[in-house]
Image (cartoon, rainbow, N blue to C red; front, side, top):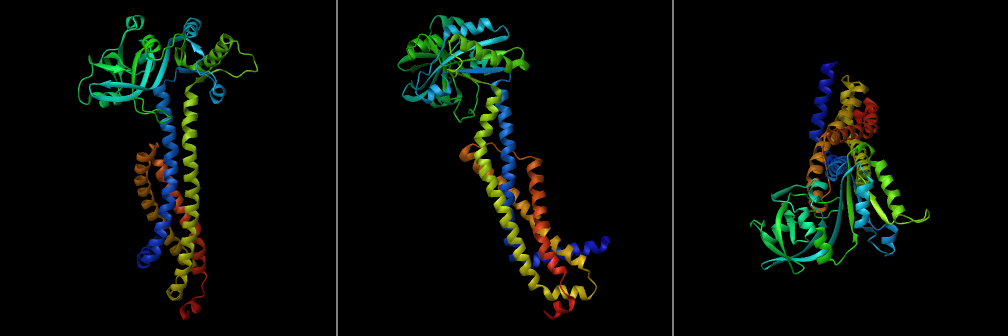
Length: 405
């Protein structure tokens, strides 16, 4: 039995090698389909892996509250609705919050050092900014509470902005001009990468909140956002709801009115990234399924032609004792061999395309054993399902008529 099976497998390999053009067309069609499917699996895994990495970086114990609700911004209404006093009230009211850090921001602010000029994002915050974001200062030192109280012109610089302005020069202690104001760089933040929305987080300068509000944006009351971190992480979503009710009461919002602020939790981060990747995954999914179906039909038609071409060979084999089962197994074996090799090429193609996808769209792809096994399982299924009809036709040929044919 084993000897007979080994002989059939050997004949399958010889047939695959003999019919090179048929094999080539089948390989190409299978490889394209498997490539699309394995890329989908890698994209889904990559999306979730990236989401949990971002949640870890965002802080699983953290809430981020933005001024201005979704509807207000859509209608072009007031975007700043949270005041410094309200942030202080939150700090006093929520005893489980070990950090409550206000922030304000201004985009496209001109910054220069010597002859180099650039436009960047300016963040105003307190001395707890780096702690609030678990974002360490790796050169120099953080600014202090005294810097905030004294409205001093000091700042922390992001890695990208540092390279743009200073190149290989050490920025600590140097002065830059932010909107014409001389600001001393006291520290350099560690590299952070990009946000879920694709913004470069290292393209920024962080300064005392009071300095930014009074000297950069001319604001005395409202902030852009604040960040709260809680001791009891397991109750984070209860705190989020309590905070929402607290702010609604502070803003005297009727029950029928929507929130005029937005609370972002780790759960929203995951939802955002999954939604962001969903459209591409759907596109790849449709493409992959269509490619596999087309590949299956290509395989079936080429094998049906092969049965006609090999009628005499099949008849001779039947005449010297080969059973229907042997012919059936041989043709299915040929199909599985071709689709398996096609699966290998498809997986290699998906690895190459992933580099292109990551380069163009910075799309998170993660190839694990799931992508590999899914690709091979599908290639075998395609080989068996779409190779079955030609295999049956070959097995059911009348030996005498086949020899004549």
